Length: 313
Image (cartoon, rainbow, N blue to C red; front, side):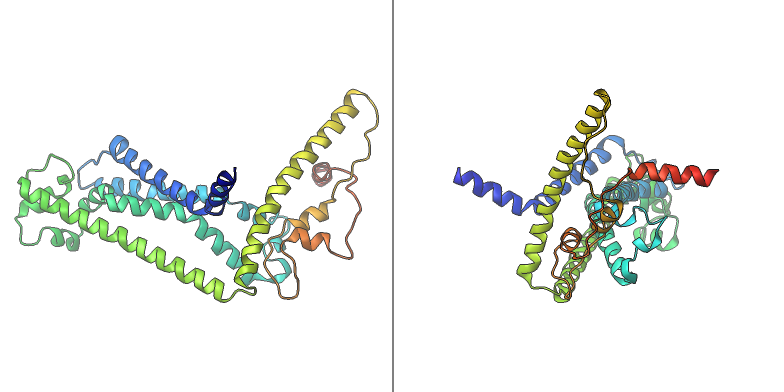
């Protein structure tokens, strides 16, 4: 049992690494499926570049959108900002808001960068895209000291329909593959360097020590875990209370529930402050001396619908 707890604790501590490794495996598998099943280079000057670039950048763009779509921090910051723009920059701290957006965008870029690296290291999409370029610089680079037929057949090199000799075609393919892999490794090196420098800068400017920062991360994980559990329990109790009142045809029993202002305050994004020894907006709210205990008398959605009805009339 102790060994099982040790293994479980190890996986829980390394879940970020395991998650990124799993994402990398999915990216490699997805790229192989695209290359072998759906990708068929048209091998003509008019379509090669657009077709290859679409398969190279299209999935990366989709992964970026999905990364932003599933970002809890983005929706926590963005929800309600059309009605109250100050939610984007609470307390007028626009620099902190910009920093949060950059962190959100960086997190969403992990999967697209993985896709680009894997696709470029494989080289299939890049070969098709570059072979369709009519730019003289590109053509001269690949067909230097070669016959005019190389220029005419360059777009057909990724396929087996080229009229070039086997040795010439293989030489061009190796040049395409080499350039693609160089670009892939450049993206990997640049991403790793930027990630390291960003982490060093963030830790260097941290207002708390490393151990306290580690404790804060652990606390936030546990708070989110328990919040989900409490939310399920209270939602269940509220649903049971409402259904019981409906079916038994009687007034509902009093049910303590946070008011709308309380929900707004604990939904803000929180960062460490030297003047406040709190680890989350929830802790800051519950430890306030002037905390408002007035319960919500009417559901928020009902109030919003009533307000919209008044505005329409």
